Structure formats: structure tokens, C-alpha cells
Length: 419
Image (cartoon, rainbow, N blue to C red; front, side):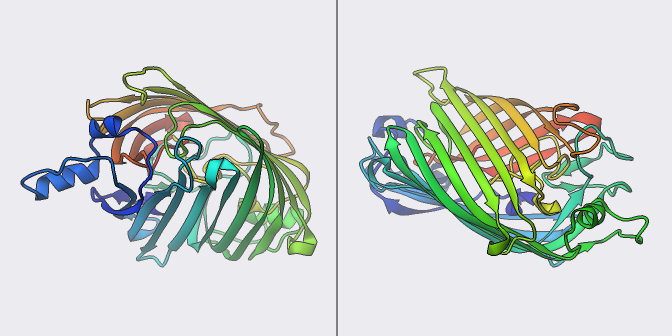
């Protein structure tokens, strides 16, 4: 989400990564992406796309301003590569982004989702590091805050709020998982995760008796207030029959991850968590396979032990930071968190350059004391526009407007579909 705080400028630069293909040349010839549009503007005669070479890399700059971060500039990129027969191998995708701001915030991120030949192995992981700011609304769902209702762009509200505590911190996050296919579409695997948080600064901490949510939680659960670690190992089960990872038209994806934080690996406290994820896609038309109904379920549950405050699952805490359109990152969070969403995707133009979405979602979180999971449901809904950036990797620019409870609303920008 680092580069998504800014408005993504209309620009793509393409280069050749491979020669294989997923969608047929006949289908691709009928589509136009941003590269085709730019090429037609700067060339008098447009080259006919033969489908024989694939520009699998797209990069776009970003720039914007927000009172919370200042002026920011950055870059977002996505790439794809086929490592086997395209009829039996899923396209591997790589995503990276970075930005810096005039207020001294910066983020760099690289992620990969790699499939070897015939999908025998699936490797997922990435690294993130930077200095950023989070907006803290407390633990659990069901609570409004004073003066809520201001407009937001992704994780950054555009107005100050007396009940929202900004937390500035630096972080390093690393994770890597490897899955082995044991049956068709079925994988098992293991991995490691290591998250480091340092230089934590509760900017509005007023004293020991009037302190922020992060400060109180850390004191109650025995964590240092200026930094901590959450490192452990992962056991994984995956079912994946999607036809593509960036923008599937059909298929089912299930991911179950058991995470065990261990003190011998550097964690402040031991903990056991279960992460569950399900994504299902139905294509509604043979003529326009991009017309899709999509369903997403995401949950993360604390089974035992405790986790640091900045590790609490919640709005925007999935790997791509996209859970919970209609709310800012961290708006609702807790030791256990549940979310689901349904979305209708459809093409707008015949050449598939423009598309649209309509979505609705809900989320809930506990606080392990007075608020139980599913006690309060927080709904969200909205509409969005899609611009096709790279038709070979199905990468698109997402611009969504969402509204939620307590007057929450905002724009949510990103590269590739939300799920």
C-alpha cells in the first residue's frame, strides 16, 4: 500500500520478459491496454500485435500530497514470467513499489508469487522495509470516534481527529513460503516470517494516565513501547484452481496458514495464529470472460499467546493491504478478525481498456475483553473503475470509491485487482 497513498499517473513502460502466453493471440488482438494507447499516440502507424512477444513488465510513477505525509513521489511496478508450458503452468507475478515523502516517510516493497513448470511448486513471499505512520482507532469493532466522517485516500485521512492517534515507526518485514503440489490443485508447504518494529513513536501520548491505545496494550501485554519483534514459522495448505493470479476469471483459491511465533526466533512472546482465506471466481460470459462475480473471505484468529499491537490483524492487514475498502488501514483490528467481500466485475469498452466493479463487504474484530467477534459488523460498499495496463499479465489500475459506517468514505487506489 505504500505507493497507493498517491494518485497514480497515467504512464506505462513495457519491456519483454518472456515469449509464452496464457490468453490466445486472437483474444489479445481484440484488447487494448495503456501501452497500446500510448504507442498509437506517438506513432503515426500502429503496429499490429501478433501475440508472438509479450511485454510482461509494467511500471508507473506516482505523486501526491496528504497533510499526514506531505508531498510524496514513488513508483509501482508489476511483472510476469512463465516458467513452463502455458497450458499447464500458472503465470508467475512479481510486484514492487517504493515512495518517499517530504515528511521523511519512505517505503520499499518487493513481492513474488512464483509457479514452477506444471505448477509443481508455488513460492510466495516478499520483503518490506520503511518508515511510515499508522492511524490508531483502538481495538475491536463497533466503536465510532469523535468527528468521524472525513474523506480519506487509502490509509490516510484528510482531516485530523482527536480520537485517532498517529503512530510513526520503522519496520522490516520478511516472509517466504514454499508449497509442493501433492494432487492436482492441492499444495502443502512451510515457511518463515520475521517482522521487526522499531522507533515506535505515539505522537499524541500525553502521559502515563492518558495514553494511546498502542501504549496501553503494550503495557498490559508486556511489550516494550518503542519496539518489538514477531518471528516464527508457518505451516500451509493451499488449493488453487485459478486461471491467473493478477485477475482471475474463474477458479477457487483456499489458503490455510498456521503461524507459530517463537521466542527462540526472536519474538517477544510466543503465539499461535490461524489465517484462513478463500477466493472464488465465476465468469458469467463466454464472449466477455472478464464479466466476473468474485467472492473473498479472509480471517486471522489468535489461538493462544499474544501478539504485538502493530501485528493485530485488521483493516488493510492482508498481504496486499487491500482488506476493507471504505475504511482506512487499521480502522478495525483485534486479536481475531474476520472479513468477507463480494464483487461484480464487468468490461465497459469493447476493447477491454476500461472496466468497472461494484463491491460490498463486511468486517468484525474482537478485543478479547468486552467486544466479541461478530458482536459488531462493519459494512462497506462502493464502485470502481479499471484501466487495463498490461493485457498479457491482466494488470490493471484500480480506482475505487467506498463508503462505510460512521460516515467513513474515501478513494482507494492500487495496481491489480483487490483480490
